[in-house]
Amino acid sequence: MKLTRTGKLFAGLLFAAAGVAAAHAQTITSLNFPGALDTVAFGINASGVITGTYVDSSNVVHGFVRSKTGKYKSFDAPGAKSTDAIAINKAGVITGFDTDSGDVWHGFVRTAKGAITTIDAPGAGTLSGEGTLASSINSAGTISGWYFDSNDVSHGFVRSNTGTITTFSVSGAGQHGTYAGGINTAGVVAGHYQDTAGVWHGFMRAASGTITTFDEPDAGTDKGQGTTAGLIDNAGTIAGWYTDSNGVDHGFVRSPSGAFTSFDAPGAGTNGGDGTVALAINASGVITGPYTGSNGVEHSYVRATTGAITDFDAPGATATEALGINTAGDIVGFYADSSGASHGFLRTP
Image (cartoon, rainbow, N blue to C red; front, side, top):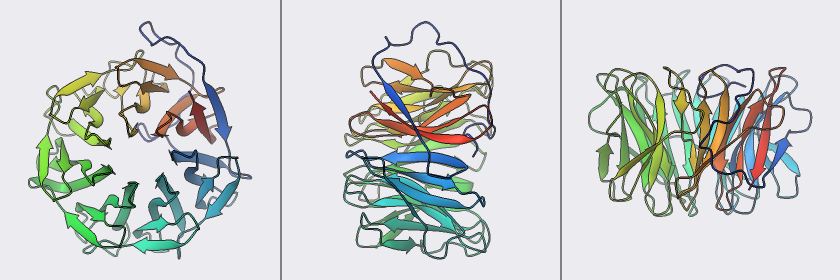
């Protein structure tokens, strides 16, 4: 499997730069679905139950759930050619997406007991590369995500725990459309959209449907630059990253009042394509994600609500990418080894 920010696996390790928060006790455990070629852990809930994806010996992608005690269970969405499990809430309900034999996307929700329901947003296209992708689930079981219509334009959606789906698009979104990311306990969604000039902007959608757009003040304004949001905690704090005018990524935090704080992981590179990306936030505002150093190597970090940043690498990794965090600060993700294989990991503070 490939690292999401770069599309390739990197080699080597970067020594931690000065300014990293003081080291503290941590345990990093490798996660491998039995017999899998590759394993990626995407989400972890408050109970320590983990969900993710693995590739079997026939190169078929399946979802998995791992219990607190380390027991794995595989699952596939009905009729799926491949299944990606992305997020899990405190009740153990999992959401994600799959592709059918025609390469059409479908969302799904899986109960803690294993029952799986397919999610197709109204207006979703039915040809290859079109369809519905679910990305986040809150404690009430409300799901957010996006879908591609028959013109390959993306739109956001929210699905209630009773199955009602509401679709939406940000005014001013261009061909690449609207992407709904995280959803908090109040049903507020954070996401991003690309305008007609190809610049990215963040947005927040209230449970009532009101949409507020925003831009990190230092974000670039050329095509492919701008603000990428998609993480939100229960207080309404939003996190993500922005790409500046030089093509460098930086993390940001947006307070509920709209104030921005930019941050960079120590050791993050300053060349185009380098920098810091925020991919997960827990209920209290602790952020994690990967950063790329000046030598092209990817590492991960955790940022406390005080702003202190600690970086880390999985043992034996040539690249490490953090993808999820729970209320206890346990982090999951994946790392690449020297052979190019991917392994999940669990980091406990």
